[in-house]
Image (tube, rainbow, N blue to C red):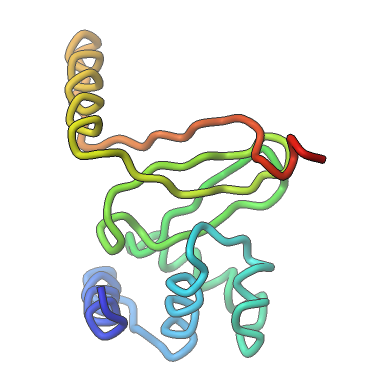
Length: 147
């Protein structure tokens, strides 16, 4: 998705939540898109030093409530943020339980369909209606294993 298309989608989602797409929010969205994966607030500020940390924190809350951003909680003290799947496409996460790093990964279409089917069976057995799924694999990243 191009930055212009992304801006249009974000503006629409914010409009639905009675929020404006301000210049600070545009820079924040650009930083998240450029980040290449889930980022901590510190990493976002490092990507665009014109964004004060307090502004990033406040705007991430609004963007999360509007469905623009997803917060990923890991085993360390820092949540990571990324653009919502409706803007980037469906994917999953590898979460390092040692350092807290989060890496995105996608599954082959066939494997994803098999996973969806298995999850639908599990949900139905529990009388649960699933809207979507998230898959987080917990373990140790290559850097922590080598350290």
